[in-house]
Image 1 (tube, helix red, strand yellow):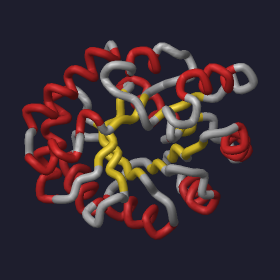
Image 2 (cartoon, helix red, strand yellow):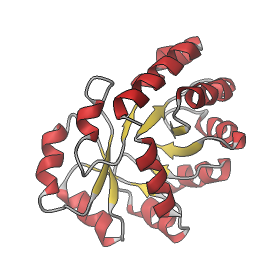
Image 3 (cartoon, helix red, strand yellow):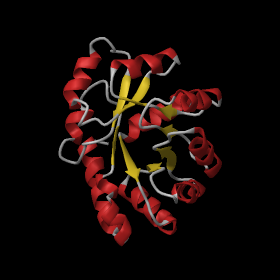
Length: 209
């Protein structure tokens, strides 16, 4: 299950990172992402509506939906109950990581250092989230880590946008990038789905999908 998930993420190359305040808009948002060519979503637990948003998107059956900003087991369980197919955490929470591994549930724990990488590898994970990417040294940090950790793959998130996406994806250690620029809060609150579609298509083109 984990390998299939990673293969799919590597194919899509861009993961929209979503903080949606109104779960009633989840269906329209999912439709906009699919129309734009990115049938994938990381719905963050930064809003009270995260679980319902995940459920609505997952019920469609045409979007790879996961939960982001998963910081504890209660959130992890709520996400899975709602239909999340994978978990993403901002840091390395051992209890959440081990809970997911025990259930063969894909998880991308957040790391920003060699310590986090070692913790992930010790648990059999060779793909991690690099967060916050821009503030943690950017692409230069990835290049430095690639020397001793050439077998580790990264999904950087934070500080990535349409202008630098292609540069990040060009590095062999990076299988995909997460980003919120194509699903910015102001677009979601306004229900500007045409702009979400446009930005999604732009990201797809920049990623060379």
